[in-house]
Image (tube, rainbow, N blue to C red; front, side):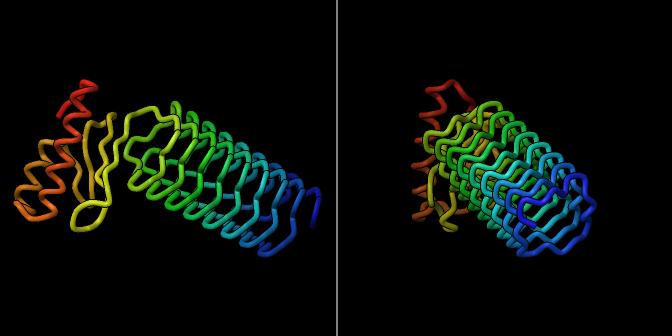
Amino acid sequence: LRGANLSDANLRGADLSGADLSGADLSDANLSGANLSDANLSGADLSGADLYGADLSGADLYRADLSGADLSDANLSDANLRRANLSRANLSDANLSGANLYGADLSDANLSGADLSGADLSGADLSGANLRGANLRRANLSGADLSGANLYGADLSGADLASSKLPIRIIQIGPIGSRADYLVYRSDTQQVSTGCFAGTLAEFAVAVEQTHGTNEHGQDYRAAIVFLRAIIAQHGGEQ
C-alpha cells in the first residue's frame, strides 16, 4: 500500500498493523478504531483523517501530515512523530507516552487530558496548544515553543523545560522528599504541588510541619520553601 491513494476511504476498524503505508494519501479517511500499530506511515497524508480510538502504538509517522486529524483517545505510545504536522489536530485524551515528537508541529492542537509522559517534545511547536490537564511528567520540552499554550492543570513534574518558551513561570525543585518527587510552583495558579499535595506555599509549609517536623525531609522542604518565597517575592507573586 506504499504511496496508495486512499483518500476518503472507509477503513473503520481495519487491521493494518505492520503495513507499509509510507507516502500514502489517507486524507479525510475514516480510520476510527483501526489497528495501525507498528505501521510505516512516514510521509503519509492523514490530514483531516478520523483516527478516533485508533491504535498507532509504535507506528512510524515521521514527517506525516496529520493536520486537523481527529486522534482523540488514540494510542500513539512510542510512536515516531518526529517532525510530523499535527497542527490543529484533536489529540484529547490520546496516549502519547514515550512518543518521539521532536520538532513536531502541534500548534493550536487539542491535547487536553493527553498522556505525554516521557515523550520527546524537544524543539516542538506547541504554540496555542490546549494542554489542559495533560500529563507531561518527565517529558523533554527543551527548546519547545509553548507560547500561548493552555497549561492549566497540566502535570509538568520532572519535565525538561530548558530553553523552552513558556506562557507562565514554572519552578521545579527535586527530586525531593520521602517520595523523591518534584516540588513544582506555577505562577498561573500561584500554587505548589508535589505527590498528592496541591495548595499555596503557606499551606504547604503547614503540611510539612505536620507531616515531617524536623526530620531530613522536613529540612529539605523548608529550604525549598525559603528559596521559593525569595523567587516569588522578587516577581511580586503571592506566598
